[in-house]
Image (cartoon, rainbow, N blue to C red; front, side):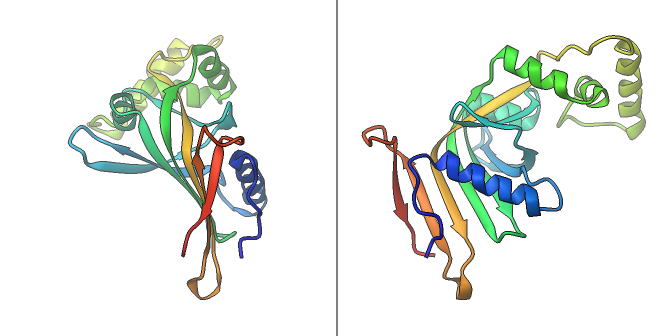
Length: 200
């Protein structure tokens, strides 16, 4: 059966699993798939990096003018998926999205490498690029502009916080008899969550 007994707070269980992934995953243990829905109802999914789990939500950063940014701003609900192959585990999340506040975004942007900060200015994310040279010209332009001093955060670059209403923990089992534990947001419960186990 599932080795982890249900906890009052699934984020605590997620935190333990993430720490174990950091110890065993070779690359990007904080990588997650983010699924959004476009205006035509077509889903889209891509990989991003989780940057924080705080205030009850999962935080990542992006260009708000990108395809994913436009999707989320128009329809602020997403699904996330963490897959840790070396641990034979995954965590699936569904929830509502809100923008992080400017101070939080500024603090994270300031922690990034300067070249990454310049890249946030240079890249018109998700839009057609005529050539690699055109991108390199933009990078050079902003590197010259912000060569000295701090690089300000572009107003179109910020973070999203996903507040989960469902979190599913999946653990591989022999003969495909996997363990699945789901937390559903339930404000009538004393813990704020109710749990159930699913057939594999």
